[in-house]
Image 1 (cartoon, helix red, strand yellow):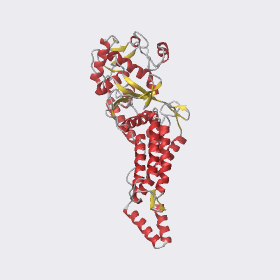
Image 2 (cartoon, rainbow, N blue to C red):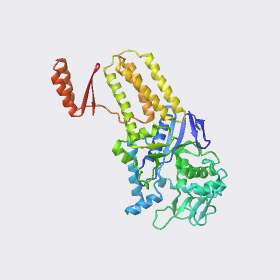
Image 3 (tube, rainbow, N blue to C red):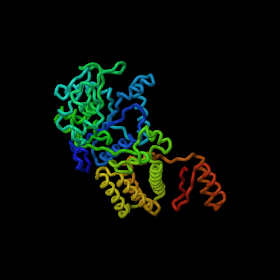
Image 4 (cartoon, rainbow, N blue to C red):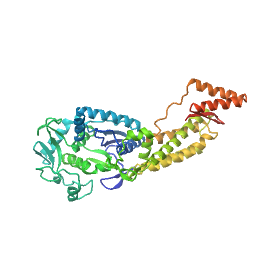
Length: 462
């Protein structure tokens, strides 16, 4: 498997630090609002990455944090007249609603900043003792220029970083490039005791401390959105490596942006959509499909037309799987067809080749849809149950890696509807076609469509 490494700007063969084991970290949400569709992309993409690594046999430890103390959380708490913990917990709960809707599996660990305070303070102290940090009026700052490799992830000269980045120029800082590790408490704000006085952590130090606590000094893969390369991930590297003097992460993966109608999503342009808003109109799964139908590093343009296309694509997949279920129920016993098995194996190999090429989910989906075309032909023919089950297994394996078709469930009907279907079948046997047509039409009016096939009657809910 090859991964495009932001650090080296090239695809590299994936070789984990420990054979058979992968340690990966993805930056999670700051919980002051519901997640927006931009947040849904890294959630979806790196969920697929984890699934594929596990499919390949790796034991994956995946950590994704919640930033539960932040200026925006405090501001919203003040606006509503509630505690910051109330705001944070509310939107953590909202996150889980959307994550479940998107079919995102929970990480191995979901640490919170407020539950990592001892480790954060200890790390800041270590940085200060090493000469890379300095106190100032109750805050603590990192000496960016002292870390000789500062800028190596974003590949920019220090002068460009200083002039173009989102850097606050606080009074008294030794250098405009220096960034905050610990913020002195302001009146009325929540704070924690520290050697430098009451305060709270800066944003960047949280992730570094959480990774050290849950994954160790070095990890295999660090994930996040493209907007996090600088300053967030650049600062994480400096904070960690100035203490450990070893690589913080072996591979850095960053997903591309999402535009809305070819424009950057922003509240000022009134094209800002939460996942919940889009899901209420289209459902969650088409959003997930949209996130994986393009390569993760390319921009995505969100439009209603794109979501509709994703919805139609999902319907093709669900229909194929339903047809397989029906065919399996009615198929005769018998041996595996070696020609069809070889055909299905070729699609699996095609899928794996795509995913091994820097997680190319777009080409992976193409392999799945080619399998669908072949499975539809197989299901409509006279194939054995063993052959159909073999194709269904390949289909299920690939769709589960992509994290789609998670809304499949047992197909059941009310007893009275099943009775009506049986009455219609009996009427057809007795050549009472008028009664059979009336029952079919009555069921259609109740949202149940019947289809007569050589293998028997199929039904689906409209």
